Length: 431
Image 1 (cartoon, helix red, strand yellow):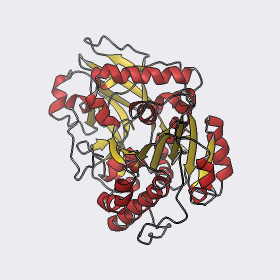
Image 2 (cartoon, rainbow, N blue to C red):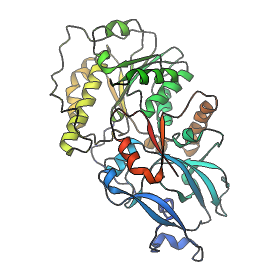
Image 3 (cartoon, rainbow, N blue to C red):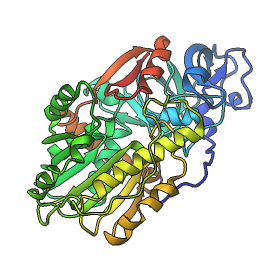
């Protein structure tokens, strides 16, 4: 698995940001490419000038929008979700960090308002989504370069379009790129109520795959279970149920090829397999792993970094160990991105504790990050992926995750809700 030992800062191309100017009128160097006679429009945006607690550092500001250049597109944002990666960026814990001050948000859908004279692929009225992360979607309007946007059909639901570019793409690539799955094969995942998890359930069902979905126990577990099953989940079980001895028989009767994928950084562990061989659980005589005591579960989200790192790696380690030890041999674990809303510190400790499983079960570690996938593939390939997902949406086989729409001015409550535990509803800012 590819592991990031340090953070690196990515300088977002200037033309993706140059449409955003301070309200004071100090346009800065990038504004020189625009007409000096154009009257700047005023827009609202959620901006952060330094990293920290999103509830404290993000501010709603009035900004000026520069005129549209020849290769630029002016858009009106319609809706933009709050994803874990957005939180990580604001905290300074993500692999990709834009220059500060920055507008929050990596995903969303917008409508084209005007285009420059050199723009050929877009026209007013088109719906578009960001081509890459770091664009800054938590604002009412923006001016971007044409190459920074991808057109999406306007006949799909708004929430589906707003949440199309991250979680469904990750889920689809997860299911397609690491194993040649066939109809009737089984997929096992935890954190199944997350955005990626809900997309996995639906895309897997569309592909004829069966899913076993693990979630944390909670007061409304039956309600959550019913919702996931309505999306196509075949089985929904809690982590507590997964640890019970009776689960040995549950897995034993399901013949699965040993295919395992662990999404460490989203608290996912996804195992894929077929009916060709058997999935066994831990033997009652197995020697337990010698693990440290967990930190308190009521630890606040913004506890000191050392405490958060302890909670983060301990939870992931135990969830991985509980599921991985149920398999026999020859599997693959892989992580996708860093989206735990907390820094994944000290990952080596988890790997050291899992060393015996890696050696004696011949597990392999793989890493996956959608942004890296985009770098390794052409823009046309990403567009093809988007259109494939749009076809699933049109056929009713892929819907948006459970969402709560929140007006932009109520961003504080949306940020707070997005960071609470056991929240199965994605917060979507509406403009």
